[in-house]
Image (tube, rainbow, N blue to C red; front, side):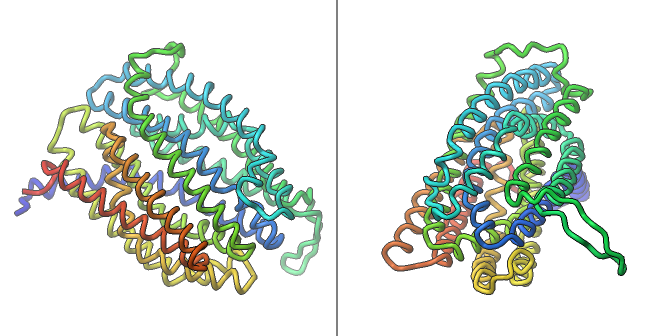
Length: 460
């Protein structure tokens, strides 16, 4: 039975969770809104343009998630340092994050720019749009250093409990992206408002303009988040050495390395998955690209709460407070499931209308709506492993998630999709069915792990 004291503690924990997660959700919501606008603007250029942009999306995930994994190492270290009351140790980690941004940023700039011409070929993109996809990818990745700073420094700030600053920077970044999209994608044209006609200047660069707009916004975001971190009262690296400090880097890398392997293997799986879908033709590739964009909106509650789960779990773990860990788990898991039930319901109901925002092609709309309705049913199940993984990241437990995600991606999604599309003549629906099976396996594995290893968190 839950007494008044437990009820009050749960309410306090709920308030803390929402304080940390809501700014992250708002940030992700705006990012998704901009992604929607990007997709709609590019979609107005035709199915080929949509397919060319979507052809390298999974490579984008591969790179971004690998960099994010490095951030998870710093997140765990900093969150636990704050929980233990050692802010000086946390600031040393922030300085090491600066060194990581420089090293990783240079590495990925060289890799992405040098491989931009062959990546569309590896992705089995239609030869007619390979050149378009290659140019888009090249422009998008020239400012890789700034993107790296945005990802890692944003994680450092969130680990310290500051989710508002990354949100504020994200708002401005996305507004810049929208403005430059409007100016660079379309040619000069005549518009009419309230019966008055006027000329709107435009560069008419098409999808290259969309890539340039994103690149400009990345540059601003990287500079802005660096300045905010440097001025931060709690976690500023000012005055700390950026030379390698193994007392900080070793524990960070111990956490980051399995997470990096996980994200790399998972994202590589996304690349293989998208490659198989690209081979199904333009309609399937366009429907998949748009459906992925639509679906990303409905994952926002899950990943917003994952950030809160990681920071709060790390704080409690660093302080050695098992009771706080128990309150966190019994509050955030039901909250996560409830939020994902609601988001999944909306996705199921409005799938056709959402597809129509990005395409006028009837076949693309019908196919995309079908797979969205399929995946909507699995949303609540996927929410559980998201938040449990967040708690594990905060405590530095990243080996088990690596194994679980590897099994789900490669043994279920990739093998299943390969068999369905190559031996049974299945199309996009069968591929998304394998994706849903992957998500359900993660639900089972993470739930079993939670029940076995987190018994002290459960209500008595």
